[in-house]
Length: 187
Image (tube, rainbow, N blue to C red):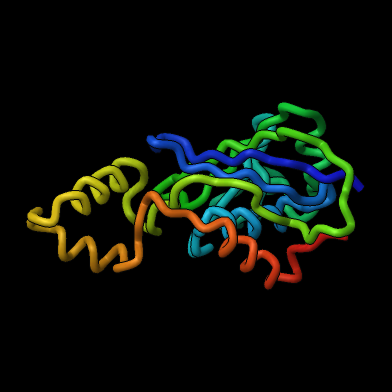
């Protein structure tokens, strides 16, 4: 079994919000979704999909999707959808805020039995709060939070939470959450 190192970056945000994750090449897209939710600090409150070679992967919604329009993510493994170094796929989370994540295979490594996978190796900045209105809403939120005299400061600070800090990301906290999710490990 190979180990994949995948770089994840959130589009339309500056400075960049990104993660570097190591996980099994046998991880399914369904499992990868849960790993991404933990690593990026999303709350998994919204729908998602992957776009790979022009095809949609995810969970079909019968009231919106035609039969066969969405490939089952539970049946697709990373080794198939990221077949070589430099391969890329698009992960979209929350069809309202439309958070687009670029996923790129950076390295294929031998599995180290002494290390627990999946794990986050590196990353920068906290993800935007859920339901903040996409990249433009997030930019507005940050602008307001930088100005304690802004008329919406107290409301937005309360909404984002007192501990929200756009510049802080804890790799250790993310890895602890991943380790506590045994269902995410692929042997």
